[in-house]
Image (tube, rainbow, N blue to C red):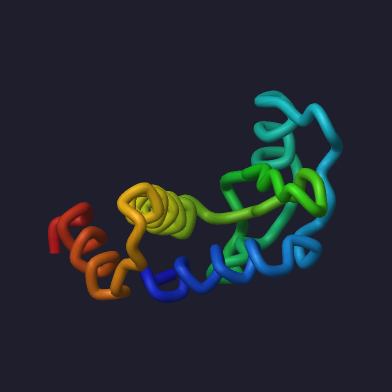
Length: 108
């Protein structure tokens, strides 16, 4: 998953969280580990086997599962962290800023 795809994924989840499967309320670490290791789910980013299970807490829809592989999870986290920084600075980032951060992070 590239940075633009990760940003689009986050926007889509924010706009329509019901696209993700509902997760039980009170889901904790052991539940995430069991879902990632013992169950078979595909990565929402690239379609490969998911290795990470994340809970998205959607205010209107409640907790939702987000299953990602390690590479996609890394990219989504990077974009999400960067977007949070720009929200605190009260400006919208340009996608090239995300791409530059990712290139720096992976040493390209």
